[in-house]
Amino acid sequence: MGDVKAGALGLGIAGLAVLAGRAILSAGRGRHEWKSVTVLAPPERMTIEGVYPGPLALLGDAIEVRLVDAPKGQGTELHARVVKNAAAVQKVRSLSGRSPEDALRSALRDAKALIETGQVMHVDPRPHGIRPATPAGAAIDAADTSMKGKGIL
Image (cartoon, rainbow, N blue to C red; front, side, top):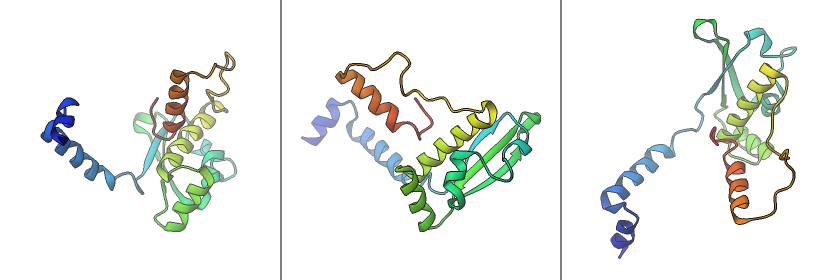
């Protein structure tokens, strides 16, 4: 009966095996890996008096940061990762309410915006006012909220 349901979804046994394999391979990825953004600014603009912009400063000593000149003189690569210890991971979780990887991606994206433009643009509140509560609107809001740290949407 399970094969019938999988077949109805167009997956079949082979498709389920591929999905399971991907889940196993990706389970260990993402933790403690370097996340990066290229900022269109020289390295000396990455900090103000030795402190990184707000989003990265909030994570403090729970992250490691390194700067590398971008190829062809096109700015600076800003790399960061969560320090490899349980206390740092817990600190990032408690500060952001999200997984450390999601919090770090958001912090890097916001730091890039602050360095390049001086502000972080947000979708909320929506400029057109309050949208009536509809199933489609709720789905869009939920997707927007859950994807903030994923680097997509």
